[in-house]
Length: 293
Ligand SMILES: [Zn+2]
Image (cartoon, helix red, strand yellow):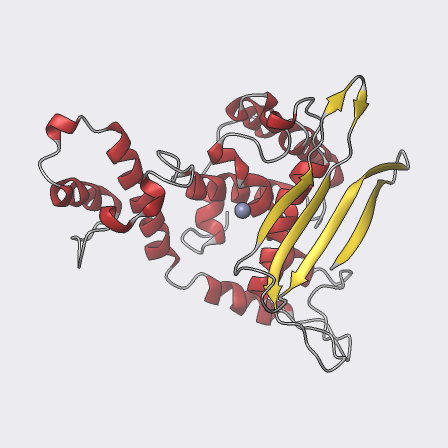
């Protein structure tokens, strides 16, 4: 694990501690990747505490003294979890219960999924160190990156419909009048008809879909896809001026999304930032389902 002290460059003030815990250790960790807070920001008697935040992954460390090379997916996961971490570091909320990721369920994945966009953007940027050959320093070619992006979009239509189906199925269970539910099969078929455009195949999803009533997702599963819509929308706007990092716009992103935490209504914040409601077209373009404007 490596620990970083984070400072605000402009004010030279201490922001917090970041624990980068990326490597698997036999017996010491569980699978997956996540963000955790050792200390959340809060203000007491006029003094703000400083956050201490971890990012955990389970990557296999190269044992031969060589650097550990990661796949694009793995780098995107690092950015994703760091996005959750940044949400905590930049919080200006007074109360712990409203700081960082303690926001509404369909808002919590926006900072993390937004952060993922900069992996490919930096790989394409000739000034960035991302996407360089670890020995020769040669930058990966834009043509190859375009082909990787195309490959990532393989079957994106079906994958999107599948997520939409999960979200609508979850919402249906939580909103349907029980008197109208004839059977689990008929309820699921009715959602399939509008969400997947295909008849239901195989067994039932409802009986093995843990997030329907558990894990804090109940009636909130749609938040995954919805966060994707917002993240693609905000990211596309951040790239409109042709800069990898559009500082004036990102300052506003920081103030509206990252600093506020759960202190304000996300819909209001979004409209303030973007001047409108979320537009799904940016996601359709990113996934190759709509041509570029
Ligand atoms: Zn996440």
